Length: 407
Image (tube, rainbow, N blue to C red; front, top):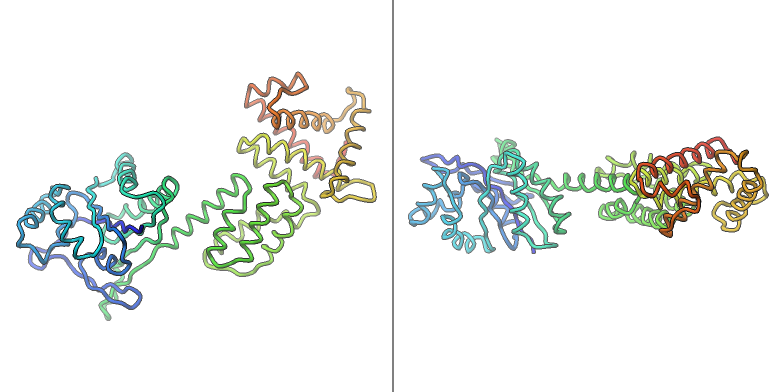
């Protein structure tokens, strides 16, 4: 199901000559009309056309050739008096639908000058559309603030009803070629893509997930980049940070730049520059901080503890230090924990105490049970206390990683 939403502007018909026409250029095909939405409907052939306008919009533009019919004369008078209603439009719709070869529906709206009216417009449009369908929009004749609302509508409809906006069209009358007497048709789908990429960046900043970018790269035809990001996303989601490094290096080495990804490639490179570091403990502790910022306490605790173990393996004096090897990690963890237990409580370092606190927090968060350390039980009744304690643990571990400390 594909529906075209076409916004009507205010009636500006000349009393002698009617509405001004333009010769719109659709990729080499010219269509002369007073209302761009008519030519667009003939070009893209939607299943349904929804005309959206106020009580004073140019509703009569569709019936200039049949002005002798009573219901059309009544409508024209209503347009002049800013008094168009759904009841007046109803008898005119069958003729228009037959002429265009698709279902037609008319929607009377307010001027959408206030926040309440703008929200009401979105709700009215959403009520006319089916879940999961495709739409296009025509903002040529609309009031100048409505194209911005159209962009918002596109995101709102996609989020609430999984509706995909194929394109937004604008017949640029002010850009008419005076020599050729043709008016360009501008497709604004690039703006929709920019919003999608911006959303993907926000999603990454929220939870460190590369997958939304993978989908966008695939849509751009960049399969290698998409595959690399998908693999990296999977490995990071399953806490296999080391394995994420290889696909991310592949992604960073791809030099195929498109206009849209050129806006975001620097941001992506900055967010993936951890792959060039000596170890990925830095990446794990950064992810722990990111999840703490989003109140994802369990994943933050897991990543913070794993970051410290990765750090212990990396600086281990033993002959093996593969931080992706389970046995190496267990050996480093046990060695540190045994040393901590041998140290009298009064002489234990802040790092040793932090590790024990973090282990208890992680276990309690994972199993939903109270901490074994009595002093920690109160933090599970006060989010601010938990935030503060988790932040202290992350800061302590980050300092140890940066300074190469084990005590």
